[in-house]
Every structure is written in structure tokens, then in C-alpha cells.
Image (tube, rainbow, N blue to C red; front, side, top):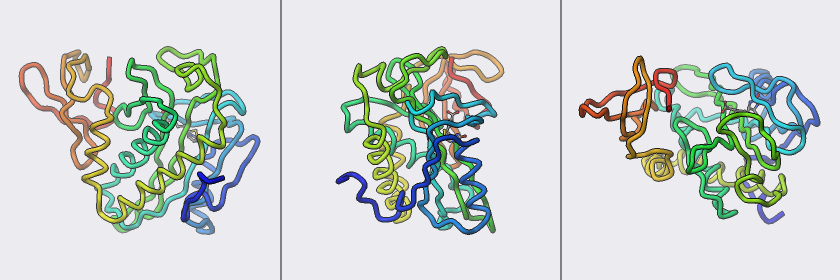
Length: 249
Ligand code: BTN
């Protein structure tokens, strides 16, 4: 109870035992204009959970967290919308540090273990109007108590920490932290958020293998204001990549 002391985020939470996709539902609510900022839709199970790149998001019923937040960040210019990815993915990692879990953000917004296993992902669906981000549906999928994931390079909190988690506590902590980071973003502290994100970034400043058209060795050097990943190649050349233009190998 002490954890859910938020100002606006999660003041209204709609829980559905089963739903299609919490992102789709939250987007319908956002578009209907009837929803207040900070509302959250959470599902025990999704029949059509959506991931990034058009992937399916699979999650065992009632064992994990699958929820979507409705934000109305109209203070944010469309070209700065990646600031939302930064503040939310950072918030998830920061919240989980409360359990002594050392997780990282894999650009743009996957939640990763240090040794390269994915525990969660975030799907942003933004509505742009007059050059501003008038609405954003932030869908978070986190593998919490599911032991068998059945995907390569995917794991869960229970597998990495050998303990069971109370979903409500994890949810409250994440929501609380997102609200704090959102307030920071709103008050113009995007540079601070980005600095923290870079400190918790998977493979930051480490030589690793990537592929664009070809495979290459590179080092992540940072993120551009538009969210592009900045990678230095062995040749010393600096490249900027949009989401679908580079793969981690
Ligand atoms: C990814 O591909 O890593 C993003 C996964 C996002 C999954 C979450 S689960 C709750 C919300 N509803 C959806 O349909 N997708 C997001």
C-alpha cells in the first residue's frame, strides 16, 4: 500500500482477466477522448499481445505483468518523442533495482540482463497532433514468475533471482518510478534522464558484433536526440541507426 503513492499515474486501473491487447484497448480509450491521463489497463492474459517490429508478445496467464499506460505528453515535440522511451525503460530498470536486480536497457527499450537475456519489453504507440505528442500508449510486458519461456535469450525475474515476486508490488514500484521520471521529463530534465539511461545501457561503450547490411564490430557511443543509436565502427566511422536498421548479434 505504501508503494502506490502516485499523483496521477494508476489512479485509475482497469484490470481485465483476459483481453485482446492492453495496448489496443488503451489506444481505443485514448482515441475516444474519454480517458484521463495516467489511466492504466492491465490484463491477466492477452490473446493478441503485440511486440515491437510486428512481433507477437506471449506471456503465461497470471504469472507476469502485461499492462498499458495512457499518457498525454503534449509538452513534448514529436521530434523528441524518444524521450518517452528513455524515461520509461529507465524507470523499469530503476524500479527493479529495488529488488537488487541489476538489469539494463537494451536500446531502444528492452529490459535485459547483463549477460544478454531479455526479461521485458515496451511498446510505445504515440499519437502526434500539430507537431506534439498529444497521446501515448505505453505497453509494458515483463516476465516475472514464468519459469519456462520457450524463447532463446529470454528469461524472467524468477529465473534470474530464484524467488517468486508479488505482481502487485512489482507493478506499484514500476508505476511509481515512471511517474517520477515523467515529472522529471515534464520539468525539462531530459538530459539527466538520458545520462542515467546511458549508464544503464546494455553494451554501452563495449566492442560487440552488429549487423546493418553487413556484420561488423562496433561500440555504442550514445543516442541521438531523435533516438537513433550511435555506433562507432572499427574503422572509426560513426554511424547513426534507426530502430530497424541495425541488429545486435
Ligand atoms: C517488445 O517487443 O519487446 C515489446 C513488448 C510489449 C508487450 C506489452 S504487454 C502489454 C502491452 N500490450 C501489448 O499488446 N503489448 C504490450
